[in-house]
Length: 153
Image (cartoon, rainbow, N blue to C red; front, top):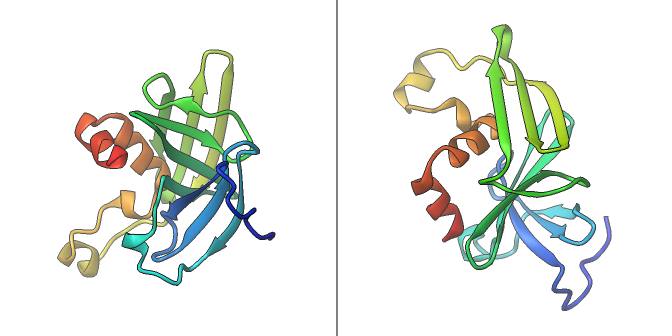
């Protein structure tokens, strides 16, 4: 898409949950991702302020707002403090999943598919469903104070 405005304090970097070694520039004012790319430096050394991932055809943002708040919201929509947001996640047969983000008078529901993870390779490497399902990852962050601390760091 476009270039990041030089020196813009409204643009932060988010780490992708969908693809390893991918980063997005996120415009906090417009609440949109303006560019997705592979960084020229190690991903660990980039100044990251949160995560983004796809739930079906929509992107969900989880970002840190200093000093100690985590915000969550769908791209282009409202963001809420994670502690005040309600998250409902439900997995059905054949990998069908329902994710609902709500807060007072706001409700956004998404249905998407995450394939079943079965077989010896998954068991051997102890791969969890949340590695492939950003909605489940966000729910697990919401439900764990320890994991929230890791996101804030």
